[in-house]
Image 1 (cartoon, rainbow, N blue to C red):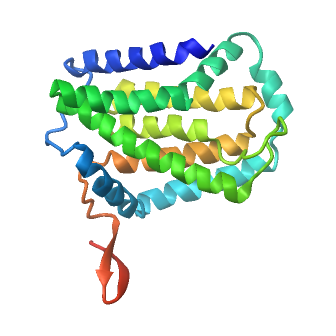
Image 2: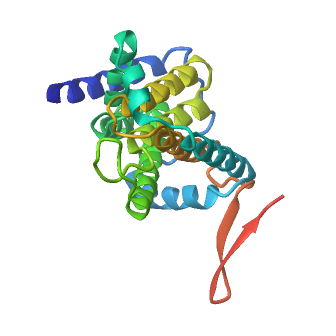
Length: 248
């Protein structure tokens, strides 16, 4: 099982590089700075762009769904249902897709190879994805340590699902940048990851819903068209402190 991750990550990078020149990928229309030196500033822009009305509605909806599912979830029944026939194979693949050893090479590989090849579209995708995953892993790690919910298998740090959050971060980036069938495929892979975490008794249903909500919000935010999104609340210096402002 250990040898499957590097080849899979490399395959995903090759597929993306080959597909960018085709009609499946839309042109972004603008050239963005994807250099390493721009990364910290871009991450800060992402953080200040998170508080929007759209993200607020996504967060409220995801929170409500998480709370609702929590009232009825049964980890053992979910695992048993997913551990049969084709569902088992699909869930196993979802576990692989959401793993850090796939998501990190996909993000860093497309960023690095795209930059090296002078392909702004591939580099931009990797740049967005790298920032998104950084914020997602940081967010889920903080919440995991704060909540420390016991997993269905008895281990620690169940809430939220980091694998699912990562998969939906990728889905958010792909959907925001390209939409269409690519967005649909990326969402499907996110769902498979959620299934895989429940099938392996690593997470409850509420864990994966919360993870999906976090990843989706962050992924769509980092892949916004305008890095200085005027619809977002902005953190600016004010007197001896900071203030949040919003343009209308």
